[in-house]
Amino acid sequence: MPDIVNVAILEDHQSTIDGYRHRLSAHPGIKVIDTCLFSEGLMGMLEDNPVDVLILDINVPISKVNRNIQPIHQLITDLKINFPNLVILVISMHAQRAMIKSILETGTSGYILKDDYDSIRNLSKIIETLADGGTYLSNRARDIFFNDHLEDLNLTQRELDVLSICAAYPDESTADLADRLEIANSTVRNFLHKIYIKLQVHGRAAAILKAQEMGLLASIDPPDTL
Image (cartoon, rainbow, N blue to C red):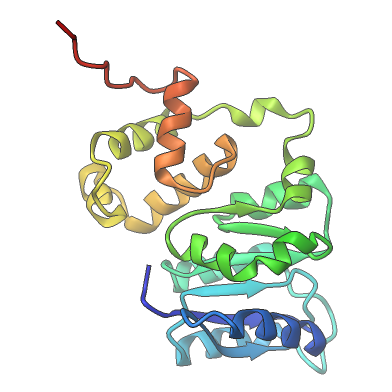
């Protein structure tokens, strides 16, 4: 995680932006460097500023003139192509499982419902978690996503392959792990985010431990005692 986490915000309500700024201003390790009210200005904002984490609302108009809502899935796809190391945190009023699931499948690192006040109060801690490679679902979003859908806990074989490499080399960076797997660093991060969400954990060590507890990964046997 960088010493200072640079944050940008795409949100069409200035009062909401001001609220996020207020909560994050108390944290010396987080800096809000720019904000945007319309999606048409987002790419330029990111090109002009070194952004680590983007707070993103779903219902943002394209421009002041074009009040139609920006196609969010295409926007996130474009962001992932143009800024592969950008961490995206969606904060939205959309509480439908299909929307939450589809957003997470784009490689978004976190999803918070705007009325999950505990998560909003802990926004700085959540951003630190995401900047450090973790993932986050607020409590209500987690309940909606996993309620009666236990099949989503199943890891694919490729996800197990990635997690197995993580377990074998727990101290290596995602870039080092990507070299071992012969895939892009951003691809490893996307795999890990999906794994964290399925296992309902926030980071790599917790994912390895839970997978071992579930019997999905082998664990190290304790040494024999005489």
